[in-house]
Amino acid sequence: MQVIRAERSIVATCRVCSQSFSYVAAGSGRPRSFCSDACKATGKQNRVVQTRCLTCGEMYAPRYGRVAGYCSIACRRFPDRKVWETRADSVRHSRHKRRAEMRSRPHERFSSREIFERDGWLCGICRKPVSKLLKFPDHHSGSLDHIQPIALGGAHTRANVQCAHWICNARKTHLGVGDQLRLSL
Image 1 (tube, rainbow, N blue to C red):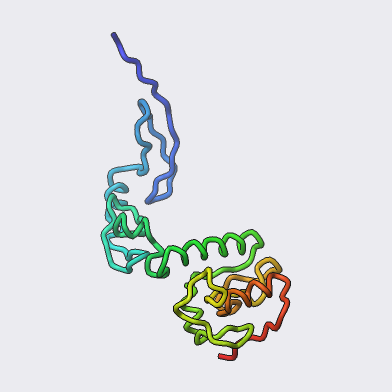
Image 2: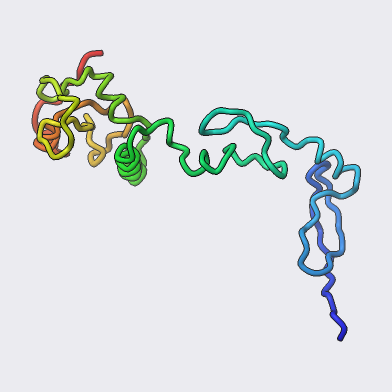
């Protein structure tokens, strides 16, 4: 039995010198990236030796000469781990981000606690203190209020959010019913 391999002529561009070159490829092998052995040696010398991880900030040497962005599988799976304190913050941010992107509005990454600390745990609508101990089902728990609602073209940025009681935020809705005075910083 004789195996016949299909040979085809391929024209490619060298990654180092940017010149066109042609070669004959047999089968379905990996395409060539360099026109000569000299360019291949130069290309290997120009590879990235170390880079910084996008999650933890540590320096690492990427495998196979490719810059992946993350030093480990854990950093790649959980790139938000330094920003989010809880899973609820991550889910909440994803929802706000999606709504802002649907309306082509800007968005930033921040946690609710960061905004609550900035505002001194005071409701931006009724000006009364928000309890740090109460959680969602309670009407007086803290919630993130968009000063200009995303539904009306507001952005999901630090400048457009404030701390509010859940009940105050629910009464205001997206129609802006009630006072919308901004806390002075």
